[in-house]
Image (cartoon, rainbow, N blue to C red):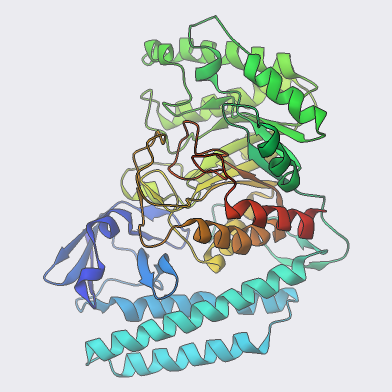
Length: 509
């Protein structure tokens, strides 16, 4: 069994929540199953493998709340590592490597970035030399982390500015290799106009909300929720979807329908569980519903999401092979019913944090790659990112980590769409259907707005990203994740809406 030990300064930084969320990944960015415990002031990590790996852990950073930081690749050794020092080493390493990559690609880097990198390395060097004084070393390591993150933010902001109005030429990559990003260089011209959309949920916007929606978005997601449409088998009610699609088309919005099959208890009809042990009949039910939906709205939908939440789902006792068959079947079925519209596949938790708690042969990226290699007419992947929620969500990440992960998914060489939920509060939300935790020291309406203003332009700047969708519109209606809407419980617009409107004006107008 693989074993790593980390001295934590101070030990109380490692909470029970941290132990549930931290994980170790390899060079391919895939999380291993781990057992993490605090023993005698040390973080002890046990694994079934003994390969070198990167510890990824939520870490409180002054002025930033809790962010997921990574160590460098560490081998097992008898002597325990000092965790703050290794997180500083990993943070500086990410900055240094990305800086070199972007310079090769033609990015002009502000001098403040290189000065920040030098200062971070100076602080790290002092921390490493003074490692015998653990508290002083940890203090210097924390300082190095802060300086490196400031420099990384400035570098990412420069990347976004220079990406505006330009596109990249990418060479194709291989998913199963080392995980290196595709070769890319600055190119001339502009990439196609991206989509910025919101999920309409379970109602039509009233006049006030409609005005806000149309100011922010040029697209809308119509959920086509099987559970709501077919509460009784064979008896389907399309009234809401009909009205939502009609409203979208009346306002010249691009329409993204689906996911038509979402492996989630809140999306599947209750009666479907009668077929939990009968995969063939379950597939027949799926086929009947998807055929009915696509046939009804053929010519009125611009993009179809065929399926969603396939890799993370633990319902209906489905094996990985059966999930793949369902995914492939939905893609082929939609194409047979609608021969022109692009078909997208939605996958949540794209970092695959859930893999640290269960074994699987196909992490999210590999799952999508298997469908691409099968020759299916898949025209894009939707990365569903529900940020800051646990379990079932994505850990809070730095802008640089976000950028690197989107580049990693670019190895598929398919258009990417990103679907987002970001909380605006951390207290109880009686209308939220998921029972999840939110970091209470991090999320407010202002923090949600700040996140949108910093990260959405970054996402849109990526060469393969063709759209960003907001997952939840209203906190006043039953919804999936707590406080993730753009309108509060009294249907008042949140500040994030203003940021989205500004982003549309600046980047998509």
